[in-house]
Image 1 (cartoon, one colour):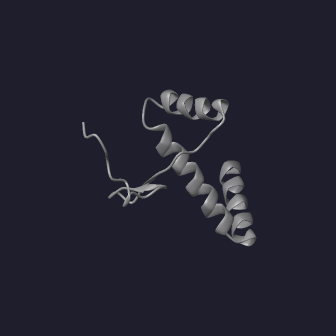
Image 2 (cartoon, rainbow, N blue to C red):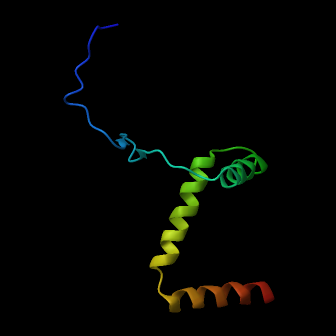
Length: 83
């Protein structure tokens, strides 16, 4: 181990990986995290972080979708259940 290290060119903050993902620190409530882990376990395995990402992406998509489109989609889904 060196006696001293030079951190003058170091950068603070998120770490961007080559995969198009960024490592961050996020604080989630214990019950929220446990729910996602349990869902992945119940589904037979996978990655709870990927599930969280999927849910956030769906939320983003819905927020960008115009109200008229949301209503049409919901009506189509409900009609499909009736038939």
